Length: 300
Image 1 (cartoon, rainbow, N blue to C red):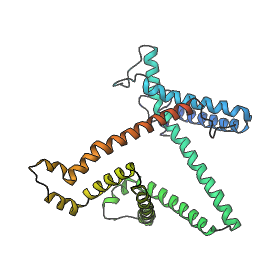
Image 2: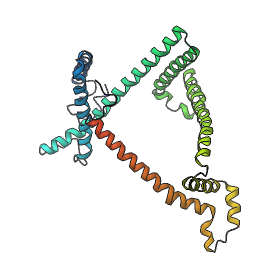
Image 3: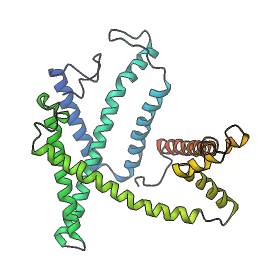
Image 4: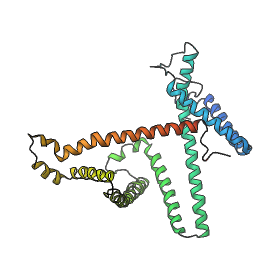
């Protein structure tokens, strides 16, 4: 009931919470959604691509207009548009929250689809007792346990009586709170840390191969990385600074100063250049997806 009732002022997209008008809109939206899904399941194959293109284009056009069209400033609930341009500005501003909620709903359906696919694959593997099917059992049990404890803990925290239990030295915690804490903080996060600590050895191996001085570029990379790493070693940086006269020009060549110069004048501009190039690439890919020019993975 909160989804369509959260906007202020009340617009076409919502109605007073608990009112019959809101219930009517929810029921109509529900049946429209069911009809849309049934229609998409039975649409001819040759029509799927135009439908996907139309939905994608309209969705992209909405956010494109939302970001470039002048937005109302300090809009009060009683404000009314003076002309068509302002009316469109008010409408697109009011609609953005609803469109964002619809995006979250679609994302939740995608998560549900992912869970269904995961269960279908691993339950089939367990049923046929294929190779390493025991790991599928562990995966499914762990997933269901995390979902169960997570949701029960979430709803229990909504109770005002439990709102301060996290800061009360675990006073009042129940089996569900301890179970969620054990599964998430005690197991999942620690296993993530252990996995990434193992990955660090592969990164070290790749860095060793990249830093081998086989060319001028590799030598520059090796020297730069060595200076930065040594500057982070307090003992090395301390003894290096002892041999530098702070009142002399050589003070600029203290290890921490050199490392700071490399990070500020070499590393940061390079990263910004890479980010700029990646941003242009993402923009180009977004435009291609918006205009349905990207053929990879498209419906045939």
